[in-house]
Image (cartoon, rainbow, N blue to C red; front, side, top):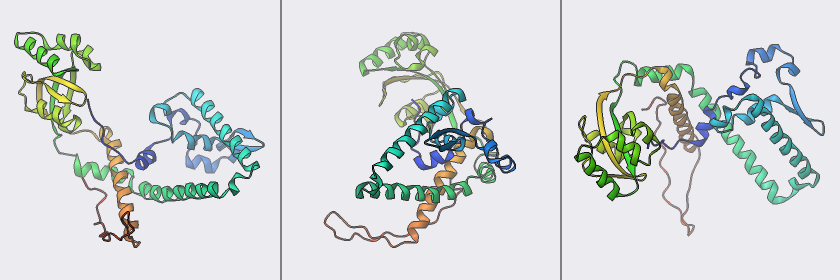
Length: 301
């Protein structure tokens, strides 16, 4: 039911920390400088005497989906090492055939290198913007001392058709228990909990569902079915409240993502403002030139 906002893929990947599985293996920057290279960054495999270091595996791990990053080290490390060995063997085979000299392959290699350079430029800006100090400042400005959003506590019954939802409303009108009907008839995964959704703010639900839920008084249920992309809902409101102010720990990842997204956008605005851009239509006719984007603050709401 709850929907996620579309995030910048680049900003999201930059926000990922090194997986916990490698936390004890990966040394800190200070320790790396103090230790010998072999001790701080051991070789985990060789392919034709080409060394694959632990740092290479850690870099690969940071690009994994979050759920895979949670795998134990004894599962994650062998998997990533094998993948690194496969890639190295493929590279050696391709180089033996001289594929890098093929014009089409060379063009793709250059394009891939350019993408890495572009990403490095953006990453530099994101790292500079997403600091502990910036996170604390954003929290102080937007959260500290302020009440949270209005919230509703609700249950719902989700069915496939409008007719099924209307039949459930008739049963409720005749005194049926909402939670028991949810357990029996709802196709939502939360049906076993009596359709309980807990507390949520309006922006955490799809609009039609949120509008219906927030319009109800405590103890009321919807008298007509509510349609969303998930199906047909009957909603019971169990309470209204103003959410408490969240602690920094509860919102810091959200803040980091917002700061990263803003840093990406600010960087794009900056570089576009430094070049001359001309766009053409499908017939090759020039379109009106872009106006420079207005500068935005990294602490924008």
